Length: 231
Image (cartoon, rainbow, N blue to C red):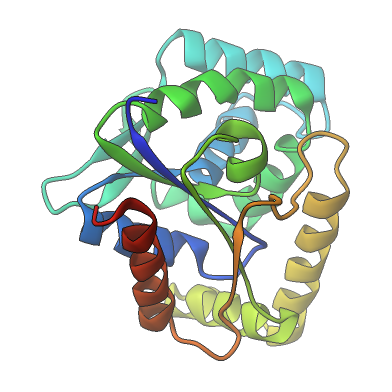
């Protein structure tokens, strides 16, 4: 394949997004946050007044967005990745709790996942290397990725991280509600009929329950360099 691809999968709140971003920065690779694409589809569906439970309608919308090149991930001058929907920076809007719930729903539909599959692979092969994070990177999107990680942590730790993230953004949430939402997301992701969350057989398991994200990234980087003899 033309690019070096690192696939990072795992449940909500495990620290995938932060770990993937830091790893991509240290390697000089492109970051592919697939969850952001599903969030953008959920946002587009909400704006189009589509029911998130209508897989056919949302799938048609996703196909339209891809065909019109209306979904994009763009690296800013400061190195941060932003998500654009029809030219609008929606990086903040897609992180709202409601949109997170919608993303969990729409990502369960085969038509939606099929629509985004080609786009994800296109982004993955757009440069010399990519760090792709999501829930089916190593199993479906990039099954031939050279290095695969499955990043997880206990439910309590993941809920606490998500709670802190939301409160830092000024959201009025409780830890118990957040724990319930993370647990429900785990159930939805692991039991959906299409591309359920699971660890690829050749993925390296990393448990971040008792390790901070700097330690996680250091571990990943060391394993990547050992696999490639330097990256």
